Image (cartoon, rainbow, N blue to C red; front, side, top):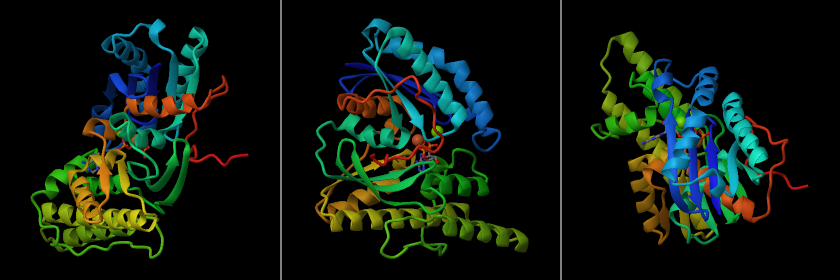
Amino acid sequence: KVILAIETSCDETSAAIVEEGHKIRSNIIASQVATHQVFGGVVPEIASRKHMESITAVVDRALEEGQCRWSDVTALAVTQGPGLVGALLVGVAYAKGVAMARELPLVGVHHIEGHIYANFLQYPQLSFPLLCLVVSGGHSHLIYLQDHGTMKILGSTRDDAAGEAYDKIARALGLGYPGGPLIEKLARQGDPTAYELPRAWLKDSYDFSFSGLKSSVLNLLNRAKLKGEEVDKAALAASFQEAVVDVLVEKTCSAAESLQISTVLLAGGVAANGYLRQRLEKALQKKDKKLFVPPLELCTDNAAMIACAGYYRLQRGERAGSDLNGQANLPLIRTES
Ligand code: ATP
Ligand code: MG
Ligand code: FE
């Protein structure tokens, strides 16, 4: 099986060729970061237009680098949602066009399922049950994976996602976009105990909340500005990151313990954070549990992860019809009827 996958949910146009679900032959990512940077965030209308401009070239490069002809492709996978609807539609329409013209099977993939499957790309031997902490630009979920295609959301964010909090704090600190990597870098030079910031534990729940933390940091910055006081930005970045990581690590460990799961996965853009990876790995090790994390380049948005998730969907016999549509708020778990 040679799958051509397409991902256009946000601000990267990506296409990948993946063989047998796991062997990445190519994974082309055309990032629009430079375009959106001047606006301090992703502008949806511009994102759609950029996807339209790039998609053909990105797919062609994926085929070329994957040393693959159109006739070698046996199936297609595309991100169906969630994401920016105009951006999703570019990928979905393109994939449907190709599927129809070349009479290839097509599956729609949930973007977050893709992030989770970045782990299966790298570690095909993972065995169930698994616990996965998904932390990305728009999501913070703790997910129980019983088997391929069977998952349960144990908790999710009640307000801001972890990555969103990083991005907003980075913007407030004047660091730029995307904020996650910039905060991580700055935090390395700061004292994480310098500023006392709140942690939303939400007792007895695996839900997350980062808006209180975000407000605290923003208030602190505003107060300092009014009083004309200096803020130690590195220390504030470190203190903020410490608060985020404390909660993510504690909740993930306690879920793994109470559900007696010995293998934990980390996924999503924030999984690229070295401090989170290190803290979570250590905490799990203490409880004789193992952490798996995708390599950096597979943590953020890419089409190879969509191909891997699509592979398992195709294996289950799933096929999308010509009515496949981009869905901005596609639910991760379909309620079976
Ligand atoms: P979603 O996957 O929820 O739809 P998205 O696709 O926009 O959202 P991703 O591309 O998965 O998000 O991840 C991007 C997010 O990851 C951004 O919020 C970014 O700041 C964050 N991020 C990337 N690298 C790091 C890092 N090293 N530390 C912290 N956050 C990071
Ligand atoms: Mg992105
Ligand atoms: Fe993503």
